[in-house]
Image 1 (cartoon, chains in turn red, purple):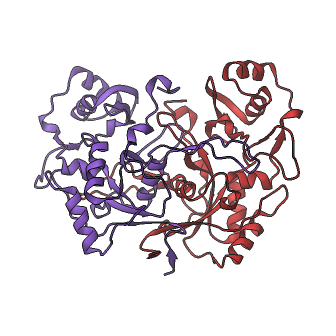
Image 2 (tube, one colour):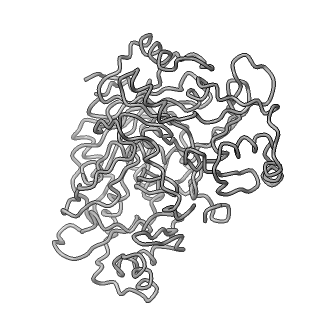
Image 3 (cartoon, rainbow over the protein chains, first blue to last red):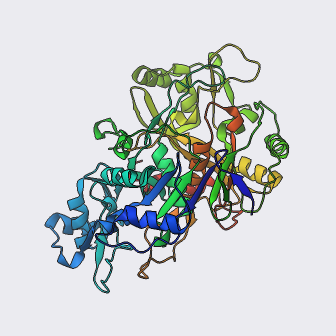
Length: 257
Length: 257
């Protein structure tokens, strides 16, 4: 194994030994404990990426689909898409707008503004601790930017709450930031010029989304133990005002809304 | 500076000392030379990410906008968007379809299938070596998957040709793969199950896009010297059939086409 110098490069590694998280767990304490056991002290410039699923589980965002009465609209959509009508009902309750639907797909604008398949209402790893039967769904965290701020306050480093989203035009899922604190989630580097002194195009980088992609590469989705990834060596200015909501294109300005 | 173990983690670093690339340069030899000078031997599992701009420059994909006669359609679009009519003409020649347009924006489906602002026809870092005046544009590489295969054959590692694209719904640009060789650009990990034995959703990862995001985090866009990034420690099966074109959602199946 080659050792590479951090600082000259970007490094990312999964926080080892995370327990399975359940409702009421103090996520900051759980992650801090795992970092201490792994002898991984956090340092300046580190970014801790936490899977949204961990935050949702800690917040108890489980929904027993057996308790959900689908509305006529949910039944209608379910008939077209092939989804479980109770799943669709939860999707509708989490959404402000259904963007597109077809067989097998519902793309919705989540109440937090993200446009995402099933409004982020997931059926995998969705069973609460102790439950052995039943159909369960897990919804996105209540306020992932606030969760990121709390984790940042407790851990002292920048935090990204990540999820995996599909995209128009391109196949496959990629990491996205649904919460962020301590870094410019959307980083405007305008003022930079090219080799010929011409202002650069594309100077606004989705920094937090790209950091979420790094974490997605490192983390196995099935493996709860990889729900937190430490990313080291990304250069960015500390920013305690920015949020992941900065990454949302306002619907009125969206050519694909 | 802390040293971290590669293999237990993902590491990425810019290949130092790359010269400015121009038409006819042998990109593989240029990169190989820089790697040798930097004493960075490539190893199994490494992925070399090369900025599409480097490939375009080596292929001489420069267009002197002074030589371009805009068509009536290009003038029409330019009037709405505020683009240079000659720039629009090049965009139209590179495209199969204009997806959306508005003041300041043309989103087009490139002849290679990517849906991207300005069909990837860039005005920054677009001047050929030796030119000191004039309006220049640089178009995407002729066949980036073929370029990736040639680089892979010469360098012996997996290769991603990357660019930075904007996206519907979300602000800021992110790295995307427009060429790939030696790795599953779109990686179907279906068959994996969650903690409760339920099949995982979102099991198809846009692996090459996420690797391009890692490189984008490491590379400064203005700095030609960072046009190649070595990504080490990503686990993937070698795949010599896959291409970046695998990442394209067929237009007929695209709910946002």
